[in-house]
Structures are given as structure tokens and as C-alpha cells.
Length: 358
Image (tube, rainbow, N blue to C red; front, side, top):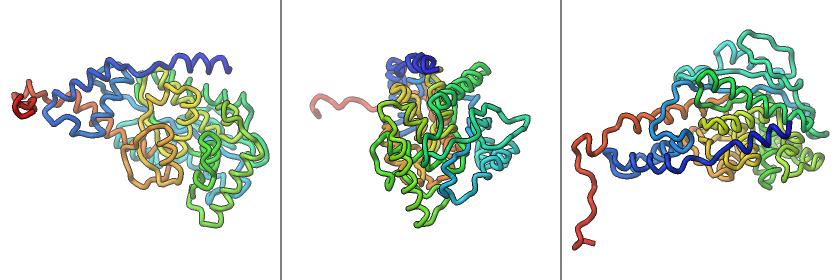
């Protein structure tokens, strides 16, 4: 399996610089001052680099909601009980969660994948890819085996391949798993060296006392497992989560297929960090949707060199911030495809100053 991941990583190519230059040139010919559309212009250029085309459209877009449980919930790190994970999966499948509502508005499908829920689940719309029934308690030992982490990554890759084969060309990361902000904070601290005091947030709404306990649990997990930061798979297996590994595969698979992947909040961005550490070129295919209210997310985005498009104080996860950012992706695409140039509109463009005024 490791060979498969090595081959996948080697297939991810740098962004198309020629297409990006052509996109910049086109933007500068449009009826506006250069750079006046700010981040929309940067996004249009990035999309050109990803696809190799100046003008883009993404009519078929999919939110991949990876669901899994975490053994570390035994430590009391969440305000919600672990049984909420399968309950919320049923809510996604019924179309009643926030991500479903916002995805309908954005014209995106939502797929829910059981990659590690600690319960037997059956539903016609549920994608069954269970690697194991939740992770083990990382405060007492490794969350999963290395082989299980690899399997979860490759599961995400295969889901992207299946979607691309039916015409999907843009992906949004989503997740569900009680306890997953704890695993995400541990991964963040392991990879970046940022202390658990800075990486651990309130998650589902912990009070100060339980927040301090959560910080202590992350510290204990890191001390117990001593993940090898030079080996991303080792870190992921020891203190990660199955849904985080699955999202890592979604991101790597999207990059390998030259598809943009819109990164949601804190947990999704941790998966992006794992993907970047496995394949540095994958960072070019990531679009940061928003800045989560969860502590640590800002530092995480800075680590990845990503600028969030929205600042809405959200901290729900599921892919909610990601689907809201799709409206901006569409706006960038329409600017490139529909806006008039100075020439076509008969509008005078900015001219070079005359020689005497230089």
C-alpha cells in the first residue's frame, strides 16, 4: 500500500504556470483597474493553474463528508457523547444538516462516507468504506495501525477517482466525528511544534475546566506515542483519525486529477496539512474557504500558506464553510468568462504616463 501512496504523490504535478500567466493577462484586459477584484482575481489565476485552462466552470461539485469515531472520547474531551456521530450521519443522509442546506443553495451534492463509525450503519445513500469501528484511545496508545491509516487515505483517493469518472471536477472536504478536534489538535502540534495550549480549542463548546483537561489529553497522547514528525503516516496513525486520513486521500486524489479542492475548517485543514507533508505540490490545489473560530485554525492556514476567503466565526465543520465558498469560486469563473474587455466594450484602458510626466 505504501508503494501506492508513493506513486500517487509522484503523480501530483505543479500548477500550470503558462495558464496562470494567461489568466493574469486576461484579467488585466477586463474593464476594471488591475487587481481591483482582489481575492477573486487571485482565485481565478489559481483555478487556471490547477486546470490548465484560463476559463473554468465547475457545474458538478461534490462535498465528501467523511464520518468516523474516536476512542479518545473515553477521556471526556467533547461536550457531546460519541453516539452523536452515527446520529448525525443519519441526519446528513436525510438531508437535514447544515451542510445539506447550504450545499443545496450552492448546487453541490453531498456524499456521506462511513470510514470509521463505531456502529453498524445501513442506508441506501450511505457509502460504506469502514476501515475499522472507530480509532483506539490515542491517550493510551496508537489511534490505529499504519496499514489502517494507509487504507483510509487510499479510500479517499478511490472515492475521488469514482467521482471524476462521472464528471465531478471540484471537491469540498467535510467531516463528522465526535472527538475529532482533539485528534486534529494533536496532529497540528506534532507537525508544527505549536503547543497543545495553542492548538486545542473548545470544539463542541467546552468550558474552561474541560478545555484544560482536553489540552492535557493531547499532551499525554503526544508523550505516549512520540510520533515521528519526519514520517507523516506515522503521525497520522498514532494521533490521527480515520476521517482525517480519508480527507487526506480526497485532497491528494483531487490534486492528482488536477481538480480544485475547497478546504473547510479546522479538521479539514489538518487533513490538508497531512496531505501537504506527504506531497508538497498538493498545496497548490487547495482553496481555503474560511477562517474557523476554532483556536489554532489561523496558525494552521499560515503554516500552509493559504488565505481564507471568508471570516464568519463558524466552527461547525461538516463542509459548511466550504460550500459557502463555492459561490466565490463561481463568481471568479464568471468574471473570467463573461466580463467585457476594454477592447470589446470600447472602453479606454489605463495608459502609460507620457514621457514628460515620468
